[in-house]
Length: 147
Image (cartoon, rainbow, N blue to C red; front, side, top):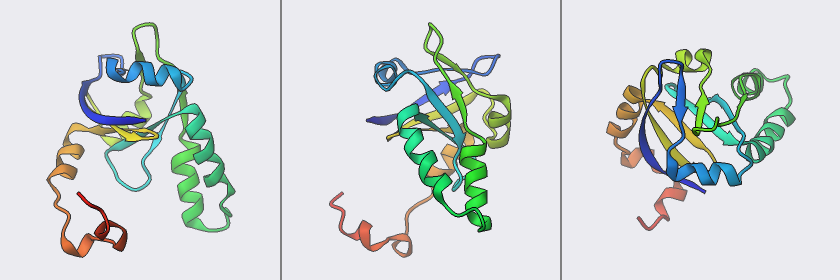
């Protein structure tokens, strides 16, 4: 399970060094990641271990593509999915098209989110963190949490 927040810097070639705290977990998960777009929030990419990705991909592809919202989800998740493997130094090459689409240049934030990572542009992450959750945003499920 991935959790935690790490500020990262991409090198001049667009490579991201997987933080050492996560390298063993990525290795145990098959050492292959899938990069795709976060369909719900801009400024963020999702990085799944291959096995976790396969389950997500199959669920998304099972949606009837006669609905525009389903096709849009399929396009952003499955159509944009790219496989990457860490090199000997634990770096993965982030595709330029993905980085450009979400505004990731040099500085970014990698979040462990359970079954996947989220890679946020530094500015988008700051904006997300600064947004408060208001009482109007609370769902019934959130009301039961003991935080």
